[in-house]
Structures are given as C-alpha cells and as structure tokens.
Image (cartoon, rainbow, N blue to C red; front, side, top):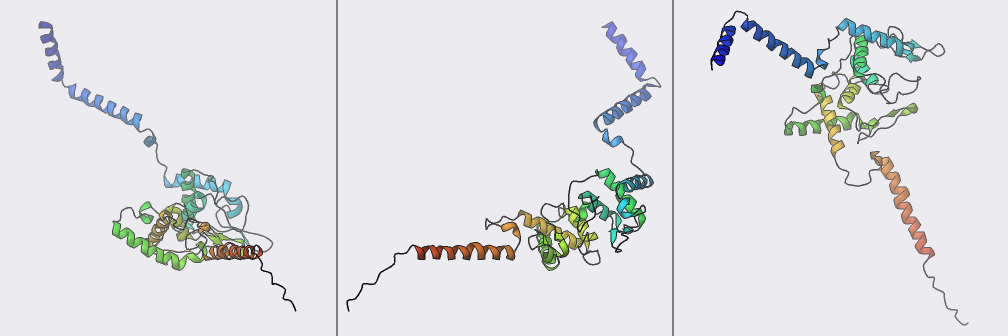
Length: 290
C-alpha cells in the first residue's frame, strides 16, 4: 500500500508540472500525424500549379501531337492540295482534348477520314495536363463537371420530365445520323456516326459541346447545358428499356427491318407457296370417248 501511495503521489506531482500539458499535446499530435500518414498516403502528394501542369502538357504534346497539329497547336496543311493534315487546336478548349484523348481517338496512327475509338494511350493525369496546355492556347469549352450531365440530384418527376424533353431534342436533331435508338449509322464520304450505347455521359456531353469530326457543334447557345443533360438522360433511359420484340436487328431502324421483312418474310412465304404447288396431287382428266 505504501508503494502504491508513493507512485500515485509521483504521478500527481508530474501532472501538475509545467511541461505535462505540452508533452501530452506533442504525443497526441505525433499519434494523429502517424495514423493519417498510414491510412491516407495518396493524399499526401503535392498538387501541381497551373504553370507546371501546362508545361507537363506541352512536353506530352510535343512528343505525341505536334507532328500533326504543329509545335504550337497551329495545325499543319499538306503541300499538295492544301487540305488540313492536322487542324488547329487554338480555341478548341480542354473539353475537346479530354474527349479526343480520353476516348483513344487521339493520337491517330495515321490521318484518315475519321478517328475511331480505341484503347486510351494516356492516363488521367497526362490527359489533364494536355488539356491544360491546349486550353492555354486560346479560350474554349472547359471540361464539364458531373453536375452538368447527371440527373441524380433530381426528383423522380423531374427525371421523367428531363427524359421526355431529351427525347424530343434527340429525335429532332440527332436521329438523322445516330438512329432513333442511338445505334449509329453510315455517313457520306466514308464516315459514320458511332453508336452511343455504353458511352460515358461525360463524353456524350463533350461531343455535343465540341462537335468532333463531322458532328455539328451544339454550343451552349444552341443547346443549353440543361438540354444537353436531358438528351443524355434520354439516352441512358433507352439503354435500360427491354426489347420486347426479342430480335432487334441491331436497332438500325426501318431500313434493316424492311429488308428483313422483304427477304425473310415475303421471300419465305413465296418459297413455301412454291413448295406447296410442287407437292400438291395433280388431278388427271378422264379421256372422254368420242
């Protein structure tokens, strides 16, 4: 008992000492910092300044893009017929870079009629740096945020209304190229309208905003951000709709359906009619005695 009493007395005197509070504070800070560094190491990285991001993007641009678009993004024209080898990127904005590079369309292996979607060659940080560099060349559309193209924050009634409005806009402005079902289709001079099935909402928004390849530009003056969001809501809704017919024929519309009806439907009925006629018992007329 005497030992315990002496120990408790020493602890009581140390707690009343001038450095006791400071020691406890330092121990708490060390423990907090250690736990933070252990459980969130990824957030300890220093973010780059705008100038550093632009410089990184410029270095990537010089290696992967300048052979077609020029050292300063001014574009390059062919010597023979004056056609653009690589268009100017001044004023296209960060959204165009994020779409073209983020979908793998750029860089192209060789110039062609249309850049197809393929595997992405750069990671997200590199795409952001290249977008920052191109944005520094001239004012243009910025990369949209999720709130621009998502309807998650709307009520059920507002979502239904947005889908209806988006369907009207899409059927009026987009079906001539992308089909009523968003399946895409052929275009003049060897081009094509790609399918919109499974395309991320951000890329659809950026395509409307920047007008890649032969697509028209639907700027915010033509279609407001809310109208673009409604179109995306409509496209997401038709992806979720079941195909009650069972055989969709690729969703290519009345041309493929009419061809199927003529070749398979009517053709099958004609073939069946010929088969019936060939296998029907023929009656013979009795010879009548003169």
